Image 1: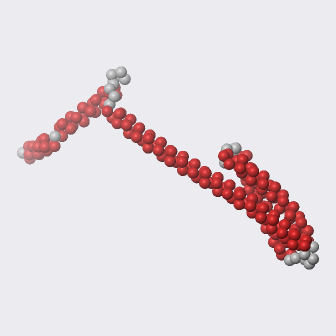
Image 2: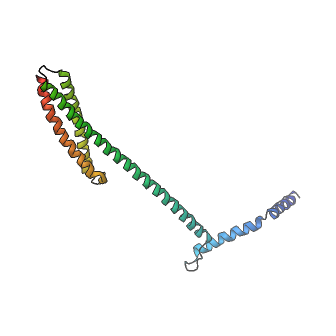
Length: 189
């Protein structure tokens, strides 16, 4: 008797929620999919799910293209900022080298014009500063030439401008060394 009550409750539960219809629908859908997968390609009908995936994949592709565009724009902006910073640093180094040459020439003129010996500390200070700035400039020049040799597309858009600065740096290094020779003579006196 208790089994009859359990069966009656179960049937009432199934009738109430109409599981029979949903079970039949899911079984028929599964059967249709099985039938499509085992039938020939000619008789297969495109399922509604594939069109949904196409719509979703189109949306996903558009979203991904948007991400790619944003990423490319960000990379381009970063590259531009780095290149501009490099060129600005190079301009600063050239200006500093020109300042070193002028400052050293002033010390040499003061030394030549004075009848008494000027303070050797100025001469020694100029020598030390000139050596350090020439080492810095030579490092920049060597690094630039090495990077250009390794990658011919490295900062290609700014290559001509940077090469002009590098040539100026090389000339200024030579000028600083010429001034250092005179300073060294005065330092020995």
